Image (cartoon, rainbow, N blue to C red; front, side, top):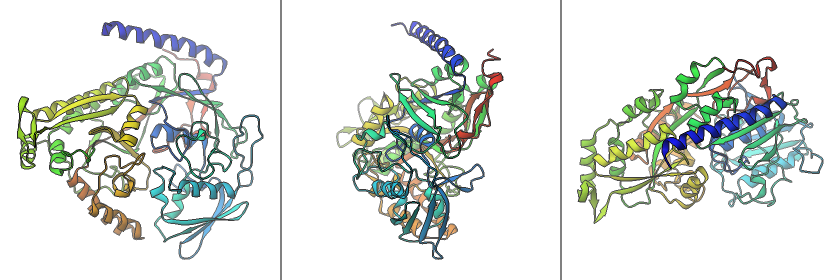
Length: 537
């Protein structure tokens, strides 16, 4: 089919969606429809390890404590707490007015201490695959004191322990398997929580529809419905916003910022997520086991030019594993300079010689690698990044085969099967600066975050040392060393952090955005009726 004609058909399809959504919106103008670049793999807070899922679970679940807009710890499911003088025991008194979302045809059950004990024990069970496990290994056990009181006993005192208790609580009567949680459990696609919104349905278009919880302990939210609409193409998502098919985009493509800045209907709100993009290497590949090869691939690409050309210079180049802006980031370690000549020299030092077609070869095996990218219909910016990567590496003798994949298929290949050589992706962090799940050898395995199989004793030792100290400055010093080691080891080609923007219709009011979880304050948002259907041009 002619490419231009296909584009025209896409525009017609969007217009049809707009017309339909306008009718629906007229019936219920208190619904917020937001666009996501992809769809969530799971809807529970334990097995989820992508940001799309995390944003949904923020609307469905609560932790014992929360973090407000001023980064202060506030009560959620716990009404108050106390700790012993040594900082090894934390006791939480729980709210007595919290109800779980009702199961179909049943009355809602009360939240109790049993649910807290159940959540922690299930989360830490060896058969539960979750990125959370490594973050809570400092807890020795949790005990039920009575129906409304729980006590956590720590293996050792840790810095800022109270902030760790933001992990989401799930109901003891929720999962089908009462002992451990897997992605096959029905609960991960049909969860029930205590949060401001309840799962209504996941429709045939894979839209996740959430309804306001009338029994929410802080009061029923003002917006009656949240609808997460998945898009495989960021251009189409932007069109959907400008044609009023959706009300909000969580993360705007930098290339669309000028267009939206000139449209008075929308508010562009920046938020400083701790995040970065990278090319990650599967060190199980014989060529990629050698750090000289990984460093050569890093030196071969002009990251500064890519950032300026593809993202309007809306970001900062990075050199290592911590998010820029984090207290753990080592500013003394500078990003590798673009140096294709040095890249070729490193490949030769690693035993490669130039073979047929200019491709570097070692022991009869050409330097041919498959790059997998999580996108069904190529986003323009991402497509340009990965094609530029392919072009740069061809110049130094590496042949890159780019495969664009639908999000869930990509996750299956990368996290479960480890069927890739190189990936392009991004990490988004909370404020913990804990990168152990990304690079510790204990986190190598199916559905774990160290999907590249990277193992290094010095890295493991530094991570372990960082968890044992209560001295903030000492931990900062350890992290600076860790940053320097991983920059040199190059398990990733660390790229850049982008400035994040959300875009939403000006009818949305009191919109405060959590930089990591996004929807933490959404129960306070509301829609101003007087502008809901006006000023459309």
